[in-house]
Length: 252
Image 1: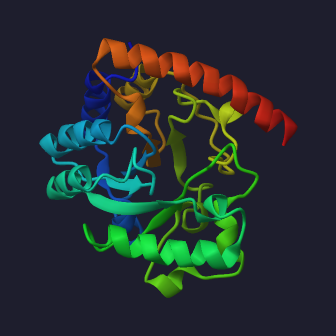
Image 2: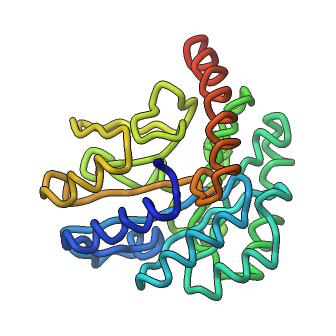
C-alpha cells in the first residue's frame, strides 16, 4: 500500500541515505545550500492530525519541513500548529484569499494581512504558498498582480521564487506522483523527463542514483496514514476528486 506513514518514512530514509540534505523553504530562499538537496514542504489542506504524524516522523529523522496552513477549520487548529512548531518545523500560510472573496482584491489583501498575523502567533512566517482552490475560477496568485507580498516581510512564494527548470518538482497532487492531469493550478514548467507514479519508484530511483540532484517535494499529509479505514476513505474520495478535476482541467 502506498501513501502510508511507513512508506513515507522509507522515502525519507532513502533520500537521506542517498546523500540529500533537507531544507525548509525559508532556508532555500535565504540561499547558501548544498548542491544535492531536498526542499520539503507540506500543504495542510485537511486532516491536520495527519500533519502532526508526518511531522513526528520527520523530527525523529532530524528533518525539518515547511507546513503551509489554510484558514479553514480542518487545517487551522492552533493546538496542532503549536505541536508541529514545537517539533522544529516551519509554520507557513497557505493563502486562498482571492477565492474566498470572489476576486475582490481589497477584501482579499485585508484578509491576507489579518491571517498572516494570526499564523505569526505560532512562528515568524517568512514564506507563503497559494492554495490551488480547484473549484474556484479565481487564481489566488493573482493577488500579487496588484500587491507585493514582499511588503509584508515575505521572502518567498514557490510559484514565483523557484526556478523549476533547475529544480525537479515532485508533488502528490491526485494521490500519485504523476498527477499533472488532475491538477488545476499546482503545475510548473519543467524540462525534467523523470516521471514516477508510486513512492516506491522514487525510493528505487534514489537508491540507484537516478534522481535529479535538486528537488522540491510537496505532499498533502491528509493522504498519508497507517489507518486502513482512513486510507480507504482517502483513496475513494481522491478517486472521485480526480474525475472532477480532469473535467475541470479539460474545460479550462
